[in-house]
Image (cartoon, rainbow, N blue to C red; front, side):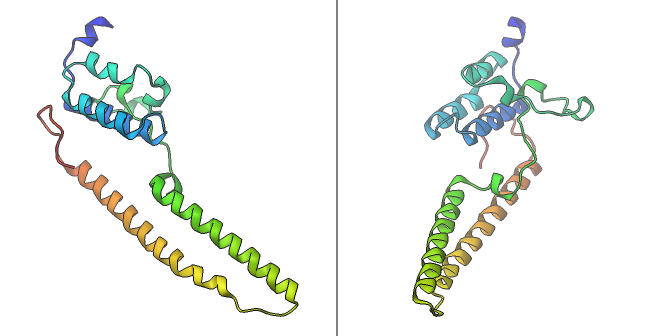
Length: 172
């Protein structure tokens, strides 16, 4: 294992390490400052040993993807394969949007409950004022669709680019 620590890492190894760091940040294991610091070290790493140092305090199971042996890339070792589970829309959504959707749904639920209780208490049909909450809901839907489309486009563009050959990070 000591021999491997001195072997020079490839661009694909560095990119796989960056992907693993991004997964760790998405899981809440790293804060933004730690992620940024380790990201710089990952792009400047020369050997596997330098890459290994980035993950000493992270669990190893997050580094291994469940990939059939025949489908594994030749230039990316299994140790650096990021976990990419099948994810739905909510799992792929940025945290800020998840928070905004949670707030909107909570406000909508409270308003619907108040409207229903007022209507039942008065014994007559009252104006359905919670409908006005559909306006920010529609805006939030548009923003979510736009952000998800931009993320999808960015991921496709990144996959289409040839690997960056220097040790420095490429343009994002």
